[in-house]
Image (cartoon, rainbow, N blue to C red; front, top):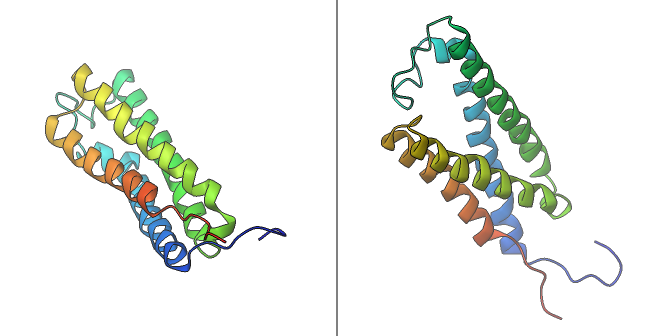
Length: 148
């Protein structure tokens, strides 16, 4: 904490620490779900209508690669969240970044995918519940400085 800065509310800091850890686990699960071997085994086929992930046609391979790249990104975010949760007051920008990523990648993109016909309604609702819920919880739990 810099000179002259007011401290954060301890209850909020404890809450955001646990939010970071839980969100890290969700992000790391998202990484594992995106592994090409799980995709080709049909693990996510219920979410994407009409896509045979076991197919080796170039279009499906590109989709598998893109989904894996997104999963890698979430995996890196999850690791940093877990590390950052040790000192949450020093990593609040990471919390803001995570909220933004979950809103954009998990809510905005999924809305686009549903409207484009590349995602099922069930997959959309599950994804919105996870990503939107995590983002909203992060906003609600974000610590504020104590009043003087």
